[in-house]
Image (cartoon, rainbow, N blue to C red; front, side, top):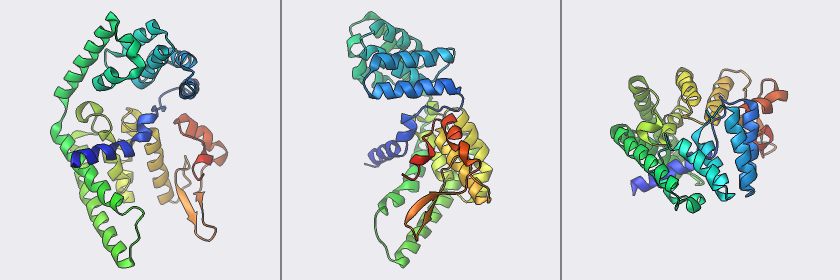
Amino acid sequence: MKKCFLGSLLMLLTCELAAQTIYRKLNSGTNILIEQADSLYKERDYLEAARKYQLAIASENNQLYIDVKYRCAAGWSLGKMYDSALIILTDISRSYDDYPKITKDKCFLNLHSTKQWEIIVASVKKNFDDKQKKLNLSLINCLDSILHDDQNLRLETRNKHFTDKEANAINKRIKNCDSINLIKVKKILNEHGWPTPQEIETKREIIPFLVIQHAPYKDQKLLLPQVLEASEKGYLNANWLATLEDRIAIEEGRPQTYGSQIGYDSLRHRSYILPLIDPENVDKRRKELGLNTIKNICS
C-alpha cells in the first residue's frame, strides 16, 4: 500500500518534469522547433511533428535528449514512415532503458513484425537489465521514506479546515519533519552527491529538491549550487531551479528573475507577481528555460 502511495505521489509531483524537456543547454532555435513539434504532435499531425523533431535533432548535431528522439520516432511511426522510425529507435536503443514503456507503447505496434524491432527491443532489454543491477536499493528506500514524510501530512491536511490550535500543532509537526528530512538530505548530498536516475530510477531525483524548497533560507542558499548542478545535468526541470533562485532573491530583498514567486492581496482577493528584475524581458528569460509566459502564473 505504501509503495503504491509513493508511486502515485511521485507521478503527481513530477508530472511537469516528465512532460517537459530540460531546455537550459539548448539554443533558442532548437527550443522553438521542439515546441512546434510538441504542439503538432498533440494535434495528431504526426508527420509534420516528426519533421520538426528531426530538424531539432539535426540542429544539435544529434546530441539531443532521448525523450525528444523518442517522440520523433513515435511521430514517424504514427505517420506510417516506419523506416524513419526504426532509424531513430536504433539510435536511441544504444542507451534507452525503459523496456516496459517501449514494449507496451501502441505508437510502435506496426513495427513489431520487423526484424529490426527485435534487435531494438533486445538492446533496450539489455540496458534495462544492466540498469537494475546498478540500482542503489538502500538509497531508494531512504528517498522513498523522505518523500513519504515530506508530503504525507501536507496532503492529508489539504482543503481541510482547522482551529488555530489544531493548525499550530500540525505546523509544528510539519516543521519538525522538515528539519529531520533536511538533515537526511544534507547527509546524502555531502556523502553521495545528487542521486542520479541510473541509481535510483527516474523521478526520485526530485526528492532532495522537495525537501530543500521547504528548508530555511540559509540552507536553501547553501544548497543552491548543488541544485544548479543537478539542473544542468538534466536531473531537475529548469522550473524547479528557477523557483529556488527566485525564492532566495525575494528572501534577500532582491527582485526575482523568472516571476515564480507570488504574493496575495487580501483586500482585492487576487494574486500578484512579486517584484521582478527587468520585467519587460521576463518572458524571454522564461522561454530560455522552456517555461510558459508570465501571464500564465496568476491566471
